[in-house]
Length: 108
Length: 124
Image (cartoon, rainbow over all chains, first blue to last red; front, side, top):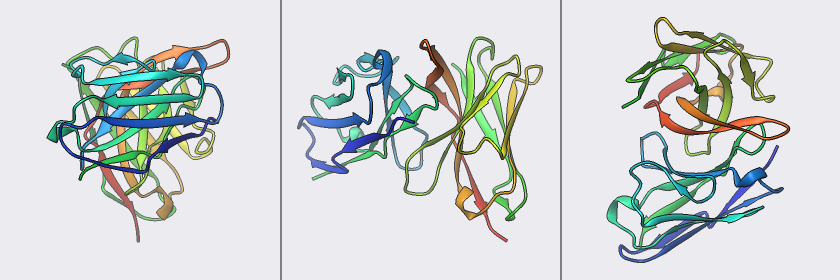
């Protein structure tokens, strides 16, 4: 089973700033099958990115994903108030699919 | 727009069976991978298993001995049963639609639609 480690655990930034979230895999993620989700408090996760860099439907272009192999990044170019949430990465290149423990993005 | 609605008892006694049902609306269940995922309070997400509309299932090895899933396409529903629950099974349980991708060795999915989640507490 692939273990995903997200860093930092908590990221404190201000609206308008750029956010960079990291997801590192314990072994290479096949075909870069890596997704990112946003979870607001008390809500279900929402898909942001799949296959490392493909934005899901209706996701604003301030969200971008990059990376390959074992190192992946989610970048939010200019933070909006609604972007402060918890973010999870997930690999689906091998079964069972596994999730990272999450990064909490909080307002500074 | 596809919507998923999960339902079931919020309280289950230790050693009993947790049962949840997910109803899918706004689209066909065919050609997708239907899953259950759980999240203990304040923690990360754990994939429980998946079912196709054919009834074919695959479970997370960590839960395989206690899990079963079923599907009823006539009602656009799929269900989860988790046997012999303990306090460690207390979590929010989500149903989700998976977009499957296969490699030479295995198949898995990312999840593009989720139910709202059902909090299940295991307590006497």
